[in-house]
View 1 (cartoon, rainbow over the protein chains, first blue to last red):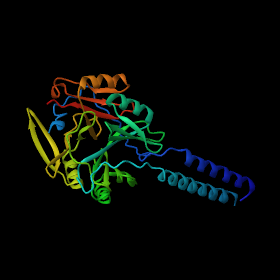
View 2: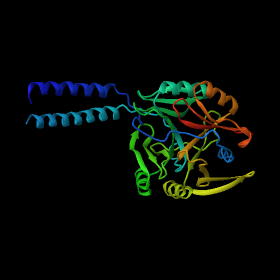
View 3: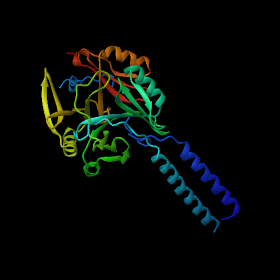
View 4: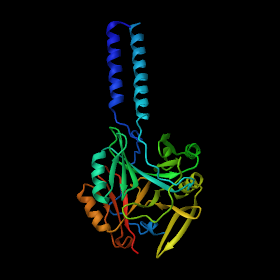
Amino acid sequence: MNKQTGHTFWRILLAAVLLGVLVSCSPYANVNVGVPFKVGPVYVNPSIGVGGIL
Amino acid sequence: MHRLLRTGVVAALQIALAVVFLGGCASRLPELPVIGTEGNTLPGKVVWHDLVTPDLDKSRAFYGELFGWQFEQLGDGYLLARYEGRPVAGLARLEAGQDSGHWLPLVSVTDIAKAQKTTRTAGGDVVLSAFELKGRGQVAVLKDPQGAAFGVLQSDHGDPEDRIPPVNTWLWNEIWTNNITGATAYYEELFGYGRKVVRIGSVSYDFFVRDGKPRAGLLAKPDPQIPNTWLCYLRVNDVAAVTDKARALGGSVLMAPNAKVRDGRVAILTDPSGAGFVVQEVRK
């Protein structure tokens, strides 16, 4: 490894460490459900809401 | 030679980045309060709800104002919501690039590895493989064969008892699908459900039961534009007031209370991140 490559290596490694420390973690950080919730405005279904009174 | 060296360095950096990133993350997952009763196992019951959201602060403000939930920061990417002191839900931050929120119901299972295998075999997807969440147990996120996302939890501390849900807490859960037959086969195998149909007034309603208890509704989605999805219900005292408040807080009203639908006791809303949920009044 020449000197310049070595410097680059340590700089990027340092950035990786800092990134790992700084990036916040949540249990589902990378969950991509990928199905935006959309319901047409004319949606009418008389059975909706029945379940809550079973 | 120089190119070879550079390739090696890049590969080493990628490995180092992955190790640092993943290792750091795993060690900082939150520890959650126990919600179950030791020895009480209720497979097929929805035992928890987590919101995945790109903006924790906005979601916190919305649900705090709308339902009077109080929040506790657990770890740096997770908020625990309580209502009248009892844990009611979690809000988890999505990383950059994912801009749509979603409510995930977590269903109790006794063998999470088997749940993942059943899902893969049926043509579904394991979105997030089982991981340990301290205080809870093993959690995984799955998609059923029709693409509806939900979570499963193999609890270390038992499941919460069935009880009549107070207002501003979870009331019910439904699966909306374009394939009733396929969804029935999958969920019956996954959770050991049986299926039941009741008539309430003029309405026929299908739902899954386990050990004699209603666990989730099953509806043919009425519009092809609606994704196959789980839909979670919250109990409220005044559906019209909650709908107005949600709109004022930056949410959207997908279906306002409507006399034709359950006597105006139900509304479908989304929060500012686009996560959908239903609010329902239960009149005595």
